[in-house]
Image (cartoon, rainbow, N blue to C red; front, side, top):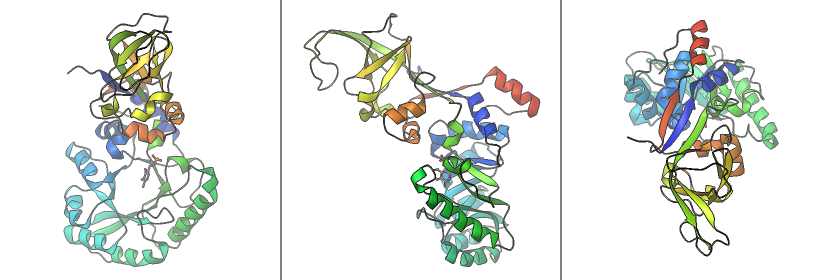
Length: 361
Ligand SMILES: Cc1ncc(COP(=O)(O)O)c(C=O)c1O
């Protein structure tokens, strides 16, 4: 099938970003289909780079990876008690924060099954408060078929400097709790991308990194084809419910719309990079298309030409910033109609050959 829009993923950039995170082992978080780019491909990639663990949000995300042949330990952050048998059958480690979950898992398991205890240190989304966690720890230790392999917490405001005191407090609540354990588990994890280089947890030996794997080297290029060209005369508009133009404009119609995840609200502040020129979006973003003004483009533009929406000339971070949205939102909203294209760079192969034989996808 022809692809009119491609999300090109650079494996070398992922490799470089992963290797830069060398302060402690990293559990790549590949939830939400790997932040929209492809969970299975990222799972293969990070396995070959030497990650010790993978993390996802939901149990079914972990099961899909298992069924596709991923052998690395996988932590699912959320599950419902009635799904405990699935976690056991597919050898998925789960985070637990209630007695109900602990009991359901113990009942489903035939042999020791790993769990990570989730501490609520202030995000107030999941997790058990430290003053009630001992009860749960006791239950895990006395569960015949469970063992405590990890303990974790999640920070609420590490990316916001105005919340630094809150973050420091959260980490000290967590660290103090872990320090009091007579037998700390194998994996202790609190940090994610925003806190990895900024906040220190004295007990942690693993970091759950999601979006941090997309920088500083950007692995993401989003490009789409010119699907049509128009010359619009003064007094006419461009697109739905548009105002009349004052001057004639040349318009390129691009194969990207809100069904692809390019939200109507992105229009007014966006431009695209086409043949060495930034062309502003004009008119409303439609379901399948959007229009850009190419009047000032020096080089001729033809139907079928590629144009860059995100990439070297419009980075994900800067585009998201200009749209005043979180780059994770922009990325995870890109729909399945956009073809994911994984680029295997020669130099990545060479680097990896020297260190470790990769299983590249
Ligand atoms: C519990 C948990 N840990 C880690 C992460 C990874 O976060 P980031 O993408 O900021 O690294 C997330 C993502 O939201 C999360 O929910």
